Amino acid sequence: MSMLAAGTAAPEFTLHTTPDQSVALKEFRGRNVILAFYPADWSPVCSDQLALYNELLDEFARFNAQLLAISVDGVWSHAALARDRKYHFPLLSDFEPKGQVARAYGVYEEQAGVARRALFVIDGDGVIRWSYLSPMGVNPGAAGIVNALEALPSNNIQKTLPADVAQEVP
Amino acid sequence: MLHEDAILTVPVSALDHVQGNAHAVVTLVEYGDFQCPACASAYPLAKQIQHRYAGNLRFVFRHFPLSQAHPYAQLAAELAEAAAVEGRFWAMHDWLYENQAAWAPHGAPGLEAGVRALGLDEAAIAATLRNPDVDTHIRRDFMGGVRSGVNGTPSFYVNGYLYQGDFDSLVHSIGRAIARQG
Image (cartoon, rainbow over all chains, first blue to last red; front, side, top):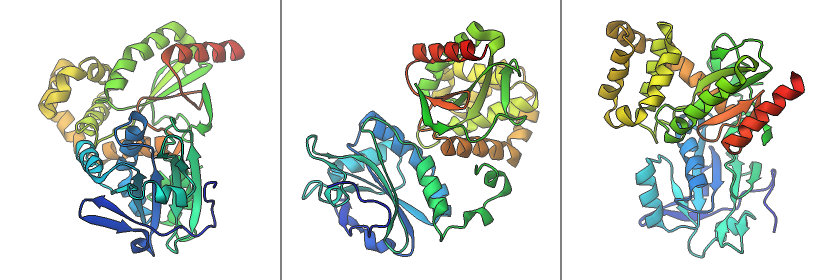
């Protein structure tokens, strides 16, 4: 199955973020969601990628967007990573059945048994508005996410940006 | 290789910190974090490139502090901006990278050593640090970098294209760009 494309309804899921807490996609209706699938906790590229997103949470919030990062790692690995790296967003554990959510989005890498490095922007109605698959070892940065959020009809952000930031939009 | 999808979205302007020939055929833009060890490792190499290509190269530094990963990166960037008001941006840039291992574990007291080492007026620096324009400049650099596809530090752009690869091939890439345009 190939990666879900823009215009598709985002498959629902409920996943653990800690041993006793879980997050469901439907909790975010009315808000935008950035889903960042990544192969593994602790691997260098993932960490840089998530470290960058961790700096952008205020920026995402201005677009009414919540970041959810997903890998097949267990909740204890997630907890240790989040504490070590001071992440201020949930790491979701696609652990049991392993990779079920990654499969539903068409971004499970069967041979390695991990999620691919894939990004989705989902709007407040639960529809995928943008998706991007990065080569496994390549950090995709955040330009695509920011551009996709900006393009959402609900986010006519130009009007709300300070002038100096608005000028940067090409 | 030069990354065709990641293009510098904010052109070099009078707002930037620039070294070298304003009419050079190659412009090298670095997005850096003063507390990032990889940036400190890249610092002498960037100096070598500037030396090697001298009049053919213009070097620009923009701030990309990853504050959650590096708790004093933002303060170090602010300090460089405060030094810039005194006309000493590059002196502070160099001091921060050359002495990163010494100041980084100590935060603000470690950074104060830089103010003294450069002989800057501590009161003037402290006043500039309270000026919101300093933060605005750093945030503008950061968000411009995000939109240009910066995915970590250091990130280098050669004539507007994100460079991804090791340092030797960055040098070759600059050499080729000079040969093409020179």
